[in-house]
Image (cartoon, rainbow, N blue to C red; front, side, top):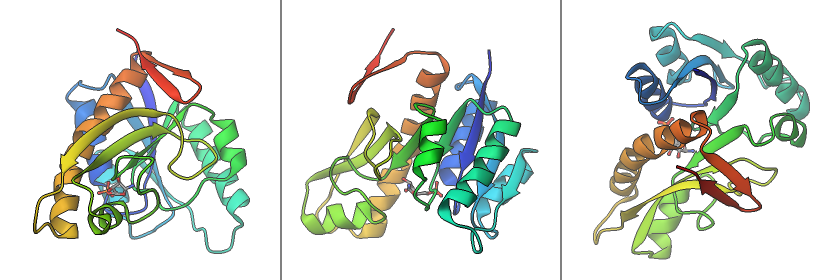
Length: 201
Ligand code: GRF
């Protein structure tokens, strides 16, 4: 059975690309059926088009957060999406959306949560002085960068690191972690128990 994946992305879409590539190679038993963006200029939309995937831009400018999310939910449902992946999606999802797709939304974050949530995970980790950062794939709940954790990958912080250098090493791990988590989901191997995600064989 092939999992139907919907991706929400606001920017360059390198994580989207890794998901598409891993579906096409067969690593993920799934297919990206739609890519939705709140940013008309997002390169993620271009990547979708190149692979013959439906791309949808929804203009957030004149809509409330809830109304915007209702529109996205409509696209997601009409496309038959079974798993929603947030791949560099810069808007906070409303409660209505999260409840509608409960336990069916996952996000990637460029730090080891619960440390350094928010939009500057790599910079915040570097400035704090941690020796290890990394990335986290987690289920999405109503709080930002908060839901049960599926996979984390560590990345050492090196002396003399810049934000860009650290971010480059972290994103390389993101491109492995996200497909691994989606594969586990597609194979029905994830079980949420409170804050913990159990991975079955
Ligand atoms: C990634 O670092 C991801 O962890 C964060 O936003 C960035 C998106 O990058 N949520 P890309 O658009 O997938 O290249």
